[in-house]
Amino acid sequence: MRINDLYLMIKDYIANRQQTPPKILDVYDTIRIVKKNNLSVARYGDGEFDLMLNINHPKYQKTNKKLCDKLWDTFSSNNNRLLVCIPNVFVEISLAGLTNKARKHWHRFVRKNQLKLYEIFNKESVYGDSLVTRHYMDIEDKTNSEEYFDLIKKLWEKRDVIIVEGRYTRFGVGNDLLSGTNSTKRILCPACDAFEKYDIILEACRENAPDKKVLFLLALGPTATVLSCDLTDMGFQAIDIGHLDIEYEWFLSHANKKTRVENKYVNETDDIITEENDSLKDEEYSASVICKIF
View 1: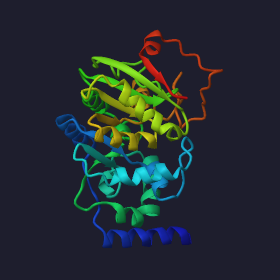
View 2 (view 1 turned 120 degrees about the horizontal axis):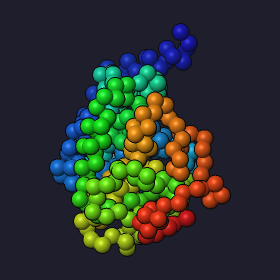
View 3 (view 1 turned 135 degrees about the vertical axis):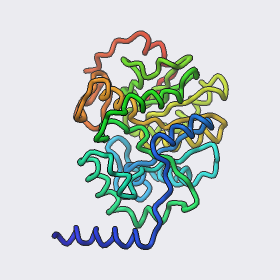
View 4 (view 1 turned 60 degrees about the vertical axis):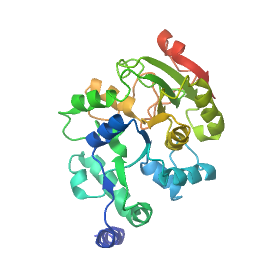
């Protein structure tokens, strides 16, 4: 056994002996409570925690002190209309349904960061599961995938929706993920380092919302996490929806590994969309764009 592995095992043992794991709803209960109470959602994954703890940063968002501060503020928000979500990976039974690759990833993450994370988790809080938007590719048994997608689609059923997304995200384009909405509009933001335009993005959301009944779906990395909180404080419902559209595309194609999706940005593959190689021609999509912030 390597010294580093032994060290991580000791850290894991100490953390579990000294701390109680956070209370986290499962994926299905997370969706149900959001639907029942019209809650907003702020999701924290490894990228957001890396930024908060100054460990690393995702390739699509460079380190920014203001962003880090806002991630901390959002995490400790006392707005009862905002459901803060963290990955449900801190007890072994929660990892049982994941693929071997996903289990290894989250084992490494927990062992490396558990002591620090347990210090910031609120023992009295009940968190949602931030993997609620990642419930296909990393799941070993995909038998219930259709049931899962049908349930999450109900969050925006018969709602007027404004999607705030990266320039090449194209959430719901080319599939029926948004077919149940009353209307769909889009605010396009930078594909990378979106937080550099944060104040402009927030103002664009406020200016383009016809009323407080509109539902914001946010697919914008860590920027979406903090934007959901600010929009909630302004009286809107805003759901940090993350990679759900890509997961849905993989589900529709019966993919068993993370692959490129035509005309959409997938940060986990090496395919990069630029103005020069962008081939999307979709009139309905173009008509839905109400604001561009590049």
